[in-house]
Length: 126
Image 1 (cartoon, rainbow, N blue to C red):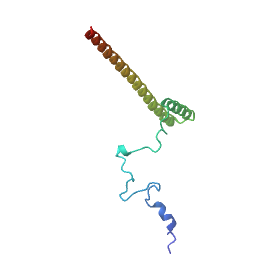
Image 2 (image 1 turned 90 degrees about the vertical axis):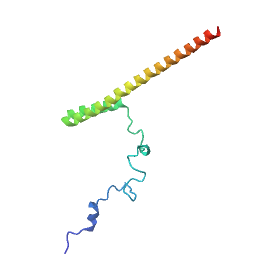
Image 3 (image 1 turned 120 degrees about the vertical axis):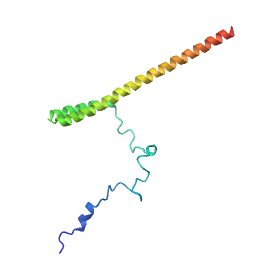
Image 4 (image 1 turned 90 degrees about the horizontal axis):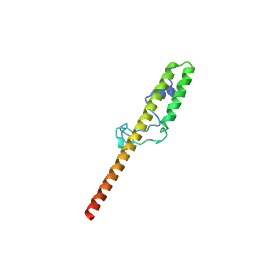
């Protein structure tokens, strides 16, 4: 007598993988490897592109709340997230300043070239 044999529960422990993950014959995703960066596309582009300043504020609030609940480790985790997004914010500001300075230099160089061209035209026309 085999009382312990239960075929209904047997399928639960098989390595089925994720049921939503369809595989082709070789076990890879149908549209290629993840290593092929050019073909990789996000499902929801822009969904995680929140404002960095808002994320800094969000994680600071979560850290304050966790600390008030007595969870120092979770609070430190949230503070690390906040620090990460503040670094992103600083790098965005630095790149904006760099781009603005670069465009000012390009405009001033263009003005110098135009004035030089006008001066040469004026001297040759005389």
